[in-house]
Length: 321
Ligand SMILES: N[C@@H](CCC(=O)N[C@@H](CS)C(=O)NCC(=O)O)C(=O)O
Image 1: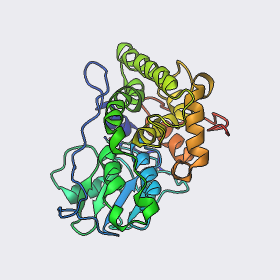
Image 2 (image 1 turned 90 degrees about the vertical axis):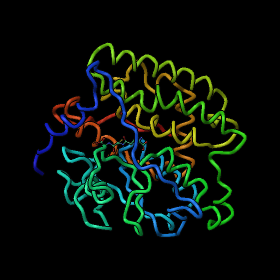
Image 3 (image 1 turned 180 degrees about the vertical axis):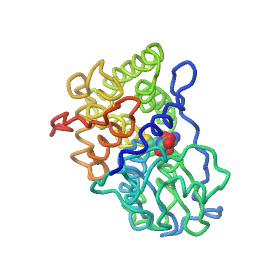
């Protein structure tokens, strides 16, 4: 229970902000694909997924793994949400215990960073989750959630039961629309909350929070009378938006100062859409862990919340249908 790592954690995150006070996310480094005939073929049991329940990017991969019925194909390990100066710790190295955090089943290492160095001793990027590991080649296949969910959508289809193979979150007829929606939703919403929260100047903060709410207004209009963002089907665009929206009232509204409005009070269509996904689809509900979410953000980001106190609310964390 040592209270170590806080100033390190602060340094760790402040290095993300550049001289103009704006947060810029680094591009992911490992960008290989699981594909037939490739270096990483779609073999059952060969790959291992490392995630944090706190992380919205990792959360995408957990949801799609469940939607596609890949549980017996790809094992998953959940790190502790108490990220400190050495990055994501496994259960045994975390400053606090919390239900659901796990140890590394493959090598018994203490932190995610050790796996990055195992894959590449010269690695100089960030030690992020999600991270997809190849047990055979003992290396990282990919650490970019947008690409991991694309792989999960198709790579194992030949080996899946027909109903799971048929689940397609990136259908041909909607691909162009999905791609163009992803672009602005990523920039202003998924990453927009981070740009607001990690900004270190008033102008950088306002330059992020205003477009964020303009995009929420646009999404509210798009979801008017609709259960899904694009077309009449659940697509990647819904998954990618959901993991940000489900964290919005519990964390981003307070911690990241995204408080021009809240989802439950100001965005009835977005709120209904989120609640339907959460309560009616177990892939979403079972992949969402509010304890890990709240404890990670409020405890780990000491430059924003120096006391590390985790707020009690909102109550409820998500409204019932
Ligand atoms: N572009 C990456 C971003 C992943 C990412 O930034 N994950 C965060 C957690 S939410 C992380 O692991 N941060 C650790 C660090 O940067 O030290 C993706 O979508 O997979």
